[in-house]
Amino acid sequence: MAAHFGRLRKGAATTAVAAAAVAALSASQAPGVTTDDLGRQAAGAQPSADASTGGEGGGATGDSPYYTDLPPLKSPNPSPSASPTTGTPVSVGEAEAGIPATVLDAYKKAEAELRASKPGCNLPWQLLAAIGKVESGQARGGRVDASGTTYSPILGPKLDGNGFALIADTDNGAYDGDPAYDRAVGPMQFIPSTWEWAGRDGNGDGKKDPNNVYDAALAAGHYLCRFDRDLSVQSQMNAAILNYNNSTAYLNTVLSWLEYYRKGTHEVPDGTGTLPSHSSGNDSGANPSPSAPATSTPSAPSTPSTPSAPSTSKPGTPKPGSGGSTSPSPPPSPPSSSTPTPPTPTQTVDHLEDANTGKLTAVAGGAFDAKVAVRAESKANKAVAKVRVRFTIIGDTDATFSGGESVATVVTGSTGTATAPALVAGEKTGDFTVRATVVGRVLGGLDYTATVAPRPADTLTRTSDTALTCVPGGEFADQVEVKATYKGAVAGKVAATATLIKSADDATENDKGPYFKDADGKVIRTLTDLTTDADGVLKLPKLYADDTAGTFLLRINTAGGAALTVELTVAAAAS
Image (cartoon, rainbow, N blue to C red; front, side, top):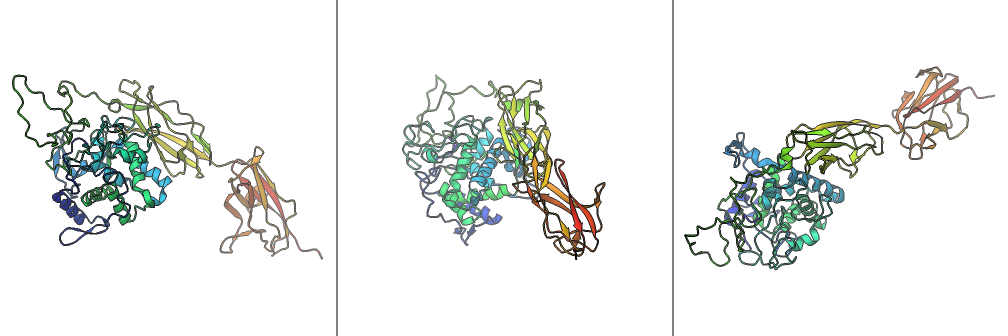
């Protein structure tokens, strides 16, 4: 975990933490976890044979410390507590269920990517949220910038074997800044040796940064889904969690948060998430600051005239506030009262303006010519850069963005403009909405109407010139088959209707003469929901005749205005 953690004894977590976690899970009936009369885990939590194949020292994190806080018990009237930032009473349950906007977006994007690349894994984003909670307190309450990168690195203690696992440096300090020993890094606390092969680029910037919540969340998802696991099977989910950090107490804590988040969460602005206060190595209750740096907390400078008292700490024991680091503290920073934290770009946004979005129309199965573009502006109508804008497709449609998703997040550029990925129409026709909102702010969004038109055809021709004849009470030997084209090219998947009409001047349905049959064998004279195949061909069902002789007309119409009238003859057979 980050520098706020205390020491973790090798091979075991505190008994109190494990017991509390098991008790909470027993009370809430977390799936797949049972206990015996002594509160020991009885089934469903044993690691699989692959549980030790993660990184050195144990799993993805090297068995680094983690937050042990459990979710609040649900009750009709949650007890209030004071907000650590404003002092305003808030509901404990509501606060704990809040996940910072960018962090939540990262978890959901990772789930969507795994749903496409590894559908058999069935990874729920709530599992990533549960792990993110116990590993870093959701990136220290969502202290991340517009691209999802933490404002300062999140580093665990040195894994130097002194109270922790021993993992000598594997990355020359590239990820953790420590050339001697490895440390767990980032919101999901990967050790460098694991990140080297497990890292992913989750935000598409061409880098794999363990301190970026999009990269880290996607990497964690792939790590959990290894070995063809199906996380909808509780035993396989348990094995995946134990593979991440091989501790039964860790498993119980993660499962308790998973169940809690599955009951409901909500988005809160970045930087305002609720921070945990207890770690697996130090349950003193010290609550970390969301803006604290990832390294040790600076000590107050001693007064020159008063010498500092000699330290009585044991060798290698971290000083209070150092989070397990035995390296010297950095120079003290000025008091926060004299250097107020400037607002983030997101906090300065007042509204979104349209940025010359064109008309959003497309033919079914095609791409939209225009893209949705918005501009983030301050109250003074000035452009705001480095703000995350979320574009969401809403409505009964199978249209998606070019990546195949219904949600896309884009960072505004220097002009304050964010342009959504290209829209791609599906097969469903009609209107839907694209909504643009600012991630991390509760502001009114902008809605855009997009329209998917049916595929058109401008010409219909019969594929045969055989006369269509039948005797009264009989059936036509040949079925009607036509081919649709549009501007000379094949018009596949074009919607069509076919109706037996009264006359060339009267297109209403005839009540006598030839007819089709429905699935129950009943007479019908209009066919709807017809579609040409990929080659533009449409073959109608068999036609039958009643006892009325004469010449009758069948009219076929398609989207785009194509129409064809086919003549049908019912006459007695020649003697």
